[in-house]
Image 1 (tube, helix red, strand yellow):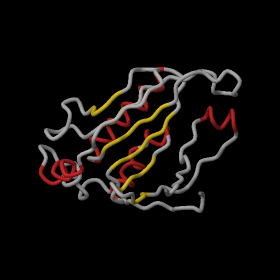
Image 2 (cartoon, rainbow, N blue to C red; image 1 turned 90 degrees about the vertical axis):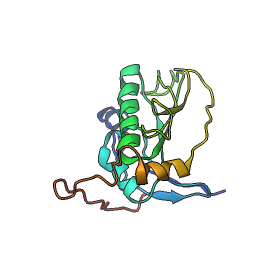
Image 3 (spheres, rainbow, N blue to C red; image 1 turned 45 degrees about the vertical axis):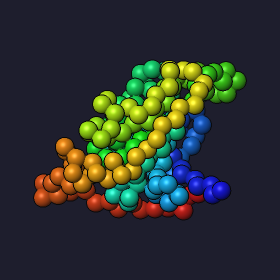
Image 4 (spheres, rainbow, N blue to C red; image 1 turned 30 degrees about the vertical axis):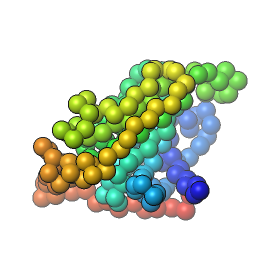
Length: 182
């Protein structure tokens, strides 16, 4: 198979301090046999413009691998991911790390609850949650993603965020100054 890489764009102050890492400068949409997908690594999901860029580039699914150390941090990522699914009419698949790594600096404790989220409309689960793991349990969750329903929601759903945007009032330029990070 094919391996795709997506650098993390936004680095938290704690990551900068503990590991001295810098953010990447590219966001890509990948064509797969099933869908066009984008990846927002953890904190990247908290920036609406990143998800909007991916959706404007044709992403139907946004994968969000994440690592949070407590429930509060997890909920920040979770609520943002749910908002990104609604705002952009895409599926969002959150996959978090659980357990403890006491011998790894800045990774001693983790909190996660993986989930598959959808836009909130008639075609989807009532609460916008297609699948959800139990908190802090190592497990695998599965669900089907209905891309015809997704397109139907975009074209004729009860609300149509993509079509009802007001560029006459709000300007968003989906332009990314892509770098060369791999």
